[in-house]
Length: 383
Image 1: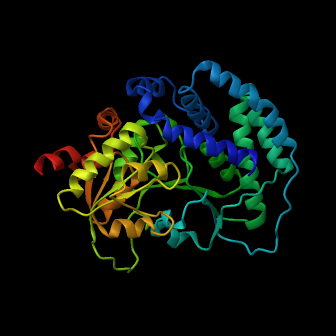
Image 2: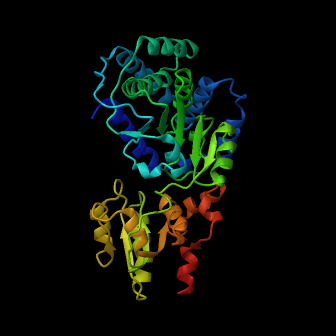
């Protein structure tokens, strides 16, 4: 695993499990987004998004991260290039999947994207023209080393695939990255369309502010309005539900489970509370299952608290099969609830195990609170 992958893995896990999306006051986020003037170009859009993301950190942390980025910047600028594999035929579109299934690409986009080359193992290249582009970027923000180094790394990935595939489109799922608008500008200069597809649930969170792609596909018009509040460019949005959200295969699965709880990063007391509520349903003769999060759940901890409940094997059972066999999906806040809604499965929002987080969902404009749903507390009261 290279340095970039290690850093990304650490940052993603910390962001999800430390609850940063819920910790920073929403009023401060809105005020901070509003204090920027209208971006003059894509470079400034990326820089404003970078500033918004750094606002979540204490200044001393941001200072040292930025300082540590300087040697990384020099290293990536002088790192040797991977050799271009020209034995592969050109593709009309390149999809930087980042481990995602290509079912997150809506059929609307797939129909016009032509042949799509899926890239998971990214290689790097930097041309003389790329270095000229980076020098101009660095002159604009000479002391923002973290901002520049991440842009350099992404340009290296894009440059390799552009030289290898000569695509008409680059498809990504990266609106949360402050490099996105810079990459739109980079692609535009090369006559390539830069396209983003939504891949996970969204709340009001200024990490996702200011971005611009040539096209950005969202699951519902609700998200377009949400992103516009965070000052993303208004011209980019297209609404399309992808196969990952609305299942289109013909596999028939019997409804054998009444309620399935879908975990995120819950542990400790929250895990105990979840198991307690699920056992209440189980003791009433209902069939209950628990699905751990494939990356963040501690299976041993779950098994120790829930020996009587069925615990799904994420490797053996796909999420589609799990949802198809259940009558109702339960979670605090998860893309799974959106999948359930789009497939006619009952949605139950857990307002018991983490009451503080639940109360923050409304002010952060969680879409499922505006879709047909039940609350776990109300469900238990009825029984």
